[in-house]
Image (cartoon, rainbow, N blue to C red; front, top):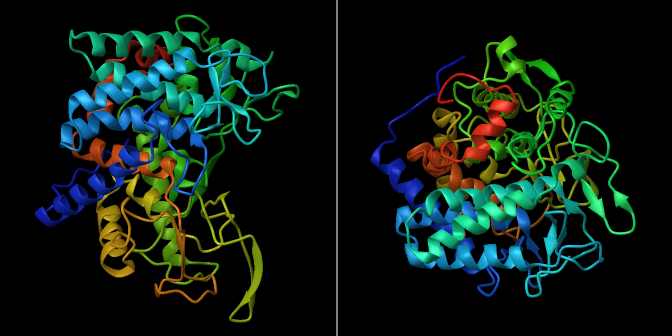
Length: 437
């Protein structure tokens, strides 16, 4: 296994990270309903809340306290409000419930907290929500009444999730469930962001996943060699980042990684290096792709549209899981995806962050750090020479920026979750050994 790259950031880089972390964190202070703690999925008017964004907020509040972005009392108050809302939320099979079997619908009405947009009960987004709750439980450790309640409620919510029900009779876990229609046909198979989901499910003290569930998931991995790198393949960068927000995978290995003398942290580093190399090679000849302009992931985009650009017919997408090098890709770059890889490859991420700030000017005109995406290939008249820029910010993008910057700088969330007994138990049941375990 390669040792993680640790660089002492010069003062100007520290100042840049300070500013980016602070401005990005503002999303969770403003795009929140203080009455229930729900976080808006994106900044579009009257848009619903996202349970994943809410979980990321719960994990980010401790960062906000440590960085002086909010007081401990304020963070404890909004955390307690959020956890109480989910404890008291309607659980059942009704089409407008908030959740069922301890899981929650992907999108919730910002005001009522009920299911929105006929969305699915999402197992993986529920995992991010529960991971955020467990982060809060690990951080708020004082003997005062409010912080004791945070710990109690987070534990209660985690114990309520019925992971066995979510298997729906097979080894792997389903993507989710819809009222009247039942379970979705898709399952968490193939390397993806569900690594955290399986660890949490295995660590449950009430409805734990069986050992064969994780083994079944491992059996669906795709091992590939791309450019000069061998790794467990997934095209979008977010797959290689989201579980790492909470779990420090440096030096710990499951059976699959032991056979390959690798760990998931190094795997994510290789995925990050491949993304940059893809942009340098730029086989599809998208505008501005380079060593300092890269980052392809699940993101907003300028489409849907099929347009001829400089004589080449190109298909552009709206929100889509873009991937590199095998696509899909339409020239849309997501700065947040680069920032969330900071712990894996700071030597290439920091120069790209500087490029986005100094050359693309994505940080200056708005309140929440970087805009979600831009696409200089898309033919549009824009005030920005870099072409189409997303008008929105997304909670699912904001959270990883804040949390992975902080993990690189202090390891805060990683240290907190090393103390979480459910994470530790889940890792051990999954076969992880070595390192800090």
